[in-house]
Figure (cartoon, rainbow, N blue to C red):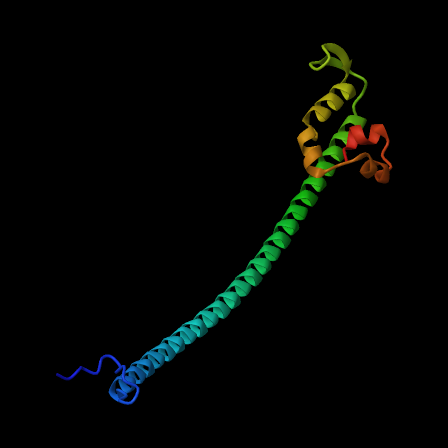
Length: 167
């Protein structure tokens, strides 16, 4: 009865070379499979690195576009805001000059002042009307503008100028 070549012979003088050759072939096949798998993993890692580089370039491009667009919008908003503020300031000056010119020419007639409930000169009543239509600044607006006493010191405003003309 012959043993299949699946196990080595125990006899040192009679070696089972078929078994050794089969084991070496199996080992070689496993090493080749391992090498192929390692190559596959390396290829996958290379593709992941390429994808990571692509994502980084895309991310950097999007950040650059965001920064550019944000800068353009901030500039446009600042420009438009300044234009509107200048237009409103110009209109305020025109209205104030018109009222000042109109009041200066009025005689000292008296009329009922709805703000005080007394009879006052037309000039006083017109000043009350003018002052009532001016837009003041609220505490929330002060906080939003981050105004401080140092800001006002630099403006050298008197209390009267501040009250009558604003900031």
